Length: 335
Ligand SMILES: [Mn+2]
Image (cartoon, rainbow, N blue to C red; front, top):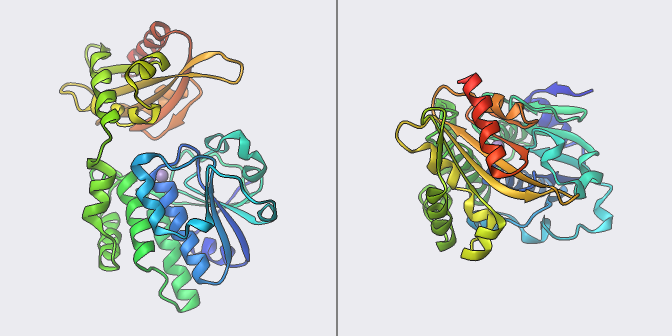
C-alpha cells in the first residue's frame, strides 16, 4: 500500500535516514538528474551519507549537469559498491517501477520514499509525495527543501543546487514554455536565479546546443514523415540500420518528436525508434507529443504505455507498416 504524504512529511521522513541512495529513472533527463543532484547536495550538507544512482550514463546533452554535484557520490551507469545496498532508497521523478531498468530491481523494490509530479504515478512504495500541479520533480523538491530549511534553520540552496534545480525545472517545462508552467514555477525559477542559477547557459545547453548527429537525425526524421488522421498526426521513425548507415546515435533522435508537432496543422507528433526485446523480438518505442487538445496518454494506454496528456510513450510490436496502421486506427477513434 502506498500512502500519500505532503512535502513537509517528505522532509521529516528523509532526515530520519543516515544512509540514502537516491534513485533516478533510466534514460535519464534533466529533471530526474537535476532533482536528484539537488537532494544529494542538501543531504550531504546535512551530514548524511547520500549517493545518486542511475542505470545509465548521462546522455551527451545533459552531461553538463554532472558539474553540479560531487562526481564521487554519483553512480551513473557504473557499478554500485556492495556496502551501499543497505541504504534507504529514495526515488525522484519515477512514476512507475518499469521506468527503471530491471538490472536495478533490487533497488527499485526497496524504495521507501518517493517524490514525483506525474498524475499517473503507480509506483509501489510505502510513502509517496506527489505534486501533480508541479511542472517538474525539481519544483516539488523545492518545496521539500523549504521545509528542510525551516526544520534545520540552515540555508540549503547553494549555487550548485540552484543550478541543478533550475535545470530540472527548465528541462521538464521546455524552458517555461509548456502548459505545466505556472506562476509558482516562474517564482521558484526567479528565486533560483537570485541564488546563482545560470539560467541563460542552462537554457542554451538544454535547448540550443545540438550534436551534428542530432541535425542528421532531424534530417532523417523529416525524410521519413508520414501524415495520418487527415494531417493531424505526423509520424516518423528510425531503424537501427538507418542509424548505422549514417553514423547517428539512438539518443540523437530525442528531439525529433518535438519537431514533428511543430509542423503547421499538426496536433500530434509521434516518433518511433526500432528496438529489440530480450527475446530478440522487434518492436518500436513510440514517443508522442500533442499541442492543444489531443490526449496522447490515452492513445499510449491502448498499447500498455502511459504518460501525460501532452507527452506520453508506449511500445508497439511489429513492422513499421503495422505500427503506422495501429496508431492511425486508435488515434482516429480518439481524435
Ligand atoms: Mn519529470
